[in-house]
Length: 95
Image (cartoon, rainbow, N blue to C red; front, side, top):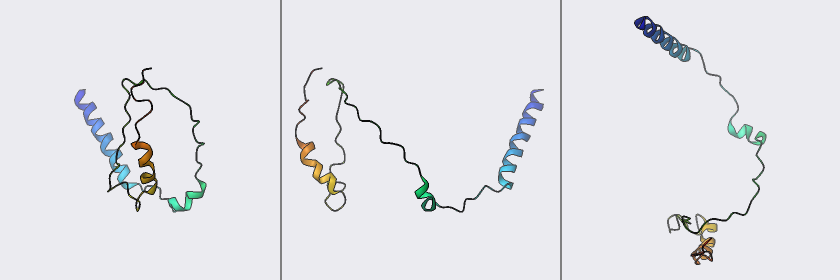
């Protein structure tokens, strides 16, 4: 019984694989550029104020280096450096 079940399962799997290889996949003539104007963009999420506990909360400031954050590549990154360089007003605050 088990041998027959395994044999039937193997035949079913092989048949499915063969069918996938033989049948052509549907081809779309449109490209992403052709469909760009039809994309529906969801609404922006509503911003809400949150309070984070000082203990167990970390603010990670990553990729502020010359290779990534430069006037030529990312001027907004360079403009944000003075703001993120200041000590946080919340540092050490207990909730």
